[in-house]
Length: 244
Image (cartoon, rainbow, N blue to C red; front, top):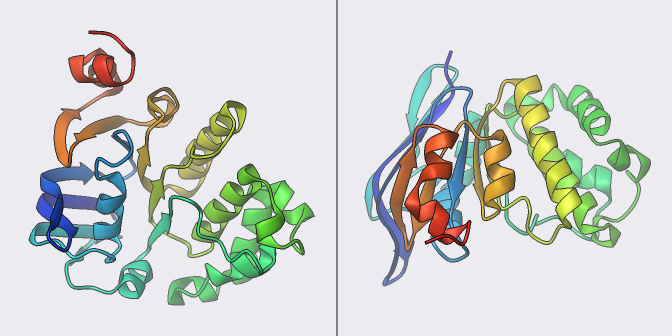
């Protein structure tokens, strides 16, 4: 039973401001797809469209979850999460005055995850031992790297089938970025997830992605079926590798 996302000919924005123009992307079952682009080019808006926070003015968004297709247009964020789609948002969006464990438990409100709370909590602590050590600590007092672990752990508490990760490298030291990317790959393989990851860090994202897209000024400028094509493209050389 497949878990995938199809995002077809989508226009979207905020009020009179159009951000996405005729965007078509897909994430097939079991893939990790990198959505690449510098800041302000629309990556977060794509994530918000998938999660129901932004309603497109045109186009279609369909998620297949365990073999059943669902149109996401018009669904609330809660309904989308209930399908088995979880977002690790840019900036983590934790509850700083709640403890690590309280933040994790808030991720388990999805109906299908409630019966698995103990199992998923144990899994999160096993995946991120630092969180287990600090489960009584306030989230706001943790380092950036620890907060990113917590944001990812909170998403896993919903027992997702499709995981959306928005800018996991923001605010982290390079060595922590590398570790976080490796952990995402490890968890994806362990849980059989389908992953869409928006990221500015080209080198780190392409370490674990199966393929990718490059977004420029709200349009898909490159649809690469493999990482070799992505690395060899002229637009990537210009935007990320400093080559003409």
